[in-house]
Length: 88
Image (cartoon, rainbow, N blue to C red; front, top):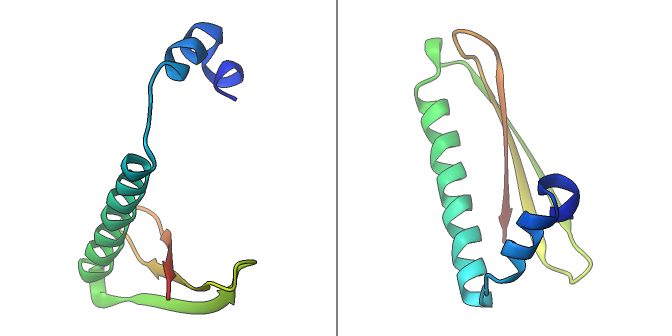
């Protein structure tokens, strides 16, 4: 996949990087926390206080419950749609 997007040289460099499961798990958790804080901040600072939230619960193949939250808030320039998936 990296060779298609970035080229053969980049693919060779990426294969030399060793990533442990803990590091990947920590990065995913950091990214999800950042997304959650961005969504919460946009909802809290929405002009006129207008926003909508939609929740949907699903179960994946490993029987892990997931809660999906779609939040839409009105921005000054354009409407902004955000999505957040939480594991229950």
